[in-house]
Image: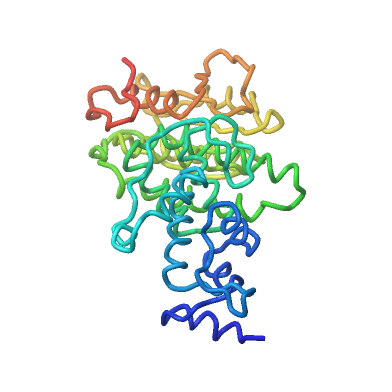
Length: 340
């Protein structure tokens, strides 16, 4: 048996590598490589002893091209055709991302349904645990389409598909969900570096918090990023904020608004939200109370007087931006404008 480390080193200096060594390098299974060879003709040029596959540097470059193209959402058959036809110089220059389309069936084995092609490319990269590709795709999408479109039409559908696959497969795919969530969170925190942002407003902030026992923070992180891009000042408290900690934060900060996120009906607390609307601060004759917004599916079907219900990221961003009126600049490309 050939030493595996020797095989991997051989691929670096131009010598042929085995299917197993190449699969480890690309983060795919050997079965996938054999399937690409059988279906699309993306096989090795050399077969030792007439049987064993040995992939040359040119073979490796072609399959790497295949991986890059499918990660952007190109259907496998089309990606294989492009990878076969492109030369080394074209590969070095990279490929332009495909236009957003719908209807491609492949999505890394995830139940995506009818979604943007970019979501399928992101799903494939996530299933392969290709962290650099996932991060690169997310950053490029925010730069190209803006945060709101990327969140609503790519990030959320892909996360939901991973969640459905996880729920139907036991603990399988939990690693995909964790990796994808981590990189989405990284992108959300990097929004000031990815898109033009408005100057921060010197005013009372918006306080963002999950209700007690609620652990899902990504939607609040998305809202935090979207508001920050508009220049809206925010304070985010994160997951499962205890009642006393939340009330103490409101007293200390004096926010213009409080957003309560609840993913499940079991965590949505109407009494807590109503209590927040009754809180006051400031000198006598000029006392203020926060605007309280409920967000997330946990609040669905619960209409409470005095509370503002936000249904999605664009809705929440425009509603909260409107509180600051003329203090804010114009919305960035692809982002919701404040409603008057």
